[in-house]
Every structure is written in structure tokens, then in C-alpha cells.
Picture (tube, rainbow, N blue to C red):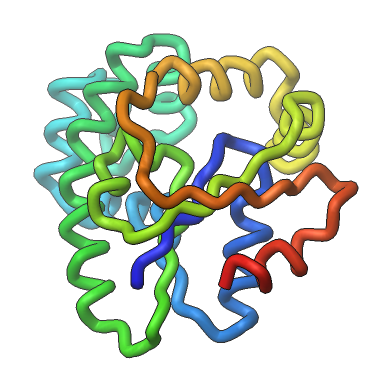
Length: 188
């Protein structure tokens, strides 16, 4: 069984993923795996330069993540082009990884479950939720972003409208008030 741990930036999905991993379950982290794929695939770098913006790639051929973020979080169409380049590669990598797992349950952590098409690959979704003010404060503290930068990232994730939600969704509330561990134990 493959279970998605999903939710917007700052909701606490990484905390849930770390707890699940500490319980002994394998967890595929889409952000870190996507970064690794992007860093090692010359075709993806070429597509980024061509389809997103030439300034995304440094003269040394490395991805300028700061510049890439500035571009895609201020231009929704550029974000869509970035996602179309990266999502297919991540789906292939996830399928390969999942095929190697021996655990009865495996997890995939993703902020953009439906946009990436990963919703079609999972058996269940754990949607991690937190109030907006908690999310903003977490991301500001973690990333050193100002409020407007955080709200721009949240807005870019919220622009996507889910047409058909997954058939099996559980809500995990990570609002810094309700204990998370009992919710996870019940969901497992």
C-alpha cells in the first residue's frame, strides 16, 4: 500500500513523514528526490533553461535555485512549465522506488499531490492541515522568508483546483495544539 502524506507548505507534512519513518516505514520525499533528479539530469537542465528561463542555469551548468524560485513563484505559467518538466521524472523514480520496497506500507511526501499526478499512484492520502497563520509562521522561521514570500508560495499551491479528490483521504491536524502521534497511529 502506497500512502501520500500531502499538504501545503508549512502544514507540517515533514513532521508526519519523520514520525512515520521513525516507526520503520519507508518514506519517499518528493522534494529531495526531485532536487537530486534535477541536479543530475542534463535534459531537465536544458528544458529549464529553454522553457522556464535561461537564468535558472548558472554559467557552470548548475541550477540557480534562488533565481528559479523567484521566477516560478512570481509567474504561475513558469511554475506550470517547471512542474511539467519535473513531475514525469519524479513519477518514474517513485514507481521504481516503490517497486523496491518490501514493507506492507510505504509513504510518499508531497506538497503537490494532484498537480503532480501522484494522486493516481497512491492507495490513500493523508492530508496534513494547519491554520494559515501557523503555516506562515513556520515557513518564515524555517526558511527566513518574509510574510509576502510565504503567502506567494501558498498562493501558487492554492491556484490549482482539485477536480476529483482521492477516494480515500484522512485528515491529520498539525496545528501545534492537537497531538500528531495519536492521529498517525490511528491512521496506520
